[in-house]
Amino acid sequence: MKSLEILRSQLSSGRFEFSRHAFKRAVERNFGDEEIRQAGMEVQVIEDYPDDKYSPSCLLLGFTDAGRPLHLQVTRADSALVKIITLYEPDESEWIDFSIRR
Image (cartoon, rainbow, N blue to C red; front, side, top):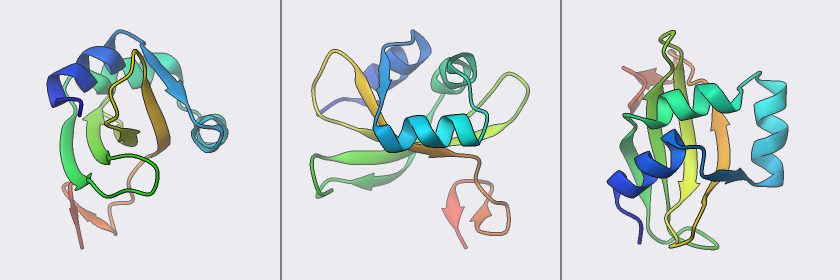
């Protein structure tokens, strides 16, 4: 299973791929690769899903250089690329400091 350091390295260096769902969400929500790389530099695991349907995954929180919060659900399976399952800007009414569910 990938460590947080590996996930950060892969995201910040652009070694990621999108699920079909995540690609659609990135386009709809206007998230570019550069913002994902920026947020990936210092992401934190805020939820862990070791028994996720297809492989272990986790929910990460990072911030772009402009301060835009970004949640990324990614797979923790060992691979050359980290797969982004979904991504979105968290709603402040649903999260405390973007990291704890209300």
